[in-house]
Each structure stands twice: as structure tokens, then as C-alpha cells.
Amino acid sequence: MAEQKLSNQDRQILDLLQRDATLSVGDIAERVGISKSACWRRIHKLEDEGVIRERVTLLNQDRVNLPLTVYIAIRTNQHNDQWAAQFSRVVQGVAEILEVHRMSGDLDYLVKAVVTDMPGYDRLYKELIKADLFDVSSSFVMETMKQTTRLPLKYV
Image 1 (cartoon, rainbow, N blue to C red):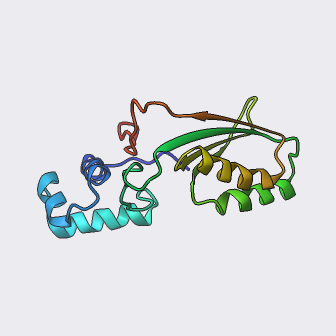
Image 2 (image 1 turned 30 degrees about the vertical axis):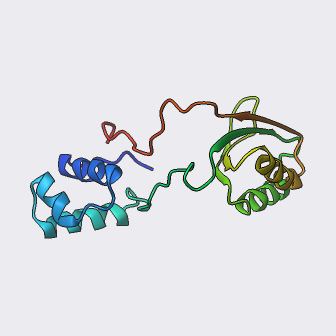
């Protein structure tokens, strides 16, 4: 995708929405210093252009009994479309898996998941290995020092 240039007002709108997507158009417009209708048009344009992908509510994983975060490093010895499709089907079917990234370097895939406890991880592992994996290594988060979903806007 080509580099997108956003106006200062668009960046302000995006910053506000990243902090609190429940803000009304009126609240956002007031903080940015534009009319409600202009603000509404800008938000919809950002959605139509794919800058705003979706609006979500972030849950406290401890409060929904998923306190353990695990990063799973996966290596495969099968680098073909059929295996990749099977792997995709497996990971799409596991609700505890939050992210899956195909990687460069020594690692083929990096998976981020949340589980209730070690038996919960064992259940996830048993689902994951249905994808016929070569090597699986897991690391469990002991402390989270920074966690955000806010993207920096100084590059657009």
C-alpha cells in the first residue's frame, strides 16, 4: 500500500478513537475543533479507506479467566500450500489463539495465545499439533511490562 498522508485533524481523530472508541462523534468533533458532520464524514472516510479496520472492546484477560499468555514458536518441515491451508484451518479453529505470524529467520510461525492454566495450554497444544508440526517451543509470560493496541501516528 502506498504511503498515506493524513491531516492533523485525521490524526487527532484516530488518536482519540484508539484511546476510547466509545466517544461520540460530538465529543470527538469538539476535541478536534470541527463540526459533528465534518467529523462523521472524516471517520467514515477513514473506515472506507481501511485506515480504521474495526472498533472493538478490549477485555481484561484475568477477569475472563484467561490469565496465562503463551508465545508458541513453530517450525515446520513442510513448506507447501496444502500444509499451510491445513495449519490455517487448525489455528482459525482455536479461540484461545489471538495472533499467528509467519516469520523470517529460524522460526516459521509465532503464535500468541491465552489460556486458563497449564491444563488449558495442554488442550491448546493438542489441538495445534493436529497441523502436523515439526517442532513446537512455548514461552509463558511472567510479567507484562507494556501492552497497547495504539499505533503511533507520526508516520502518516
